[in-house]
Length: 186
Image 1 (cartoon, rainbow, N blue to C red):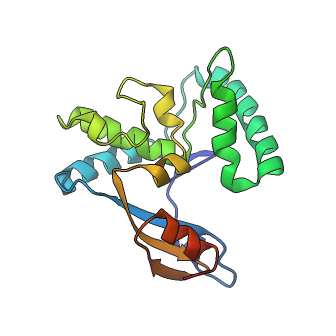
Image 2 (image 1 turned 90 degrees about the vertical axis):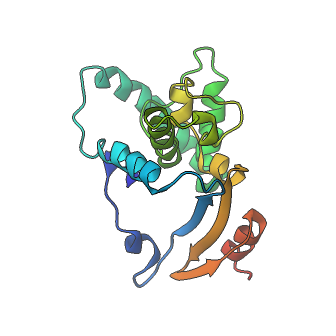
C-alpha cells in the first residue's frame, strides 16, 4: 500500500528497489511487541485497503485547498532542505501556525499509523501500544495522519531489520547502522 498525492493505491515493492537504476532506499522495521499477532495486522491491512480508490465526499473540496497549501509548504521545504527532511519540516512549520492545521490527506507513515490505531481500537488492543510518536493518543485525530518517517525511525516500539539500497538488501541492527548502509558504508 502506498499513499501519494493522488490518493491511496497499491504499489509494487520491486518498482522502488530494482530496474536499471534503482534509487529508492527502503527500511523494513517490525514491532518489538510480538503479542500483536497475524490477525491484528490482517485487520490493519484490511482497514488500509478500504481506502484504495475510495470515493471522496463533499468535504474533500475544502481539504483539497488545505492540501494544496500543505503541498506548497512541502515543495518549499524540499527545495531548501532536500526530500529527506522536507516532510518533517513542513509538518513542524504547519503545527506552529495559529490554526494548527495538519494534512488531511495521508502521507505514507501517517497512513501506517492510522491503520494501526484503527485496528487496535477495533481489536480491543490498547492503542497506546501501536502509537509510534511520543505525545499522541488514539484521539489525536489528524495528528495521527501527520506521523512522519522520522517518527517511525525514532520509535522505540519498532526494531530495524533491513535496508534496501540500490537494489541490494542489507540486514541492519538499528537506525545508526541503517544510516551507515544508506550512506554507502557497511
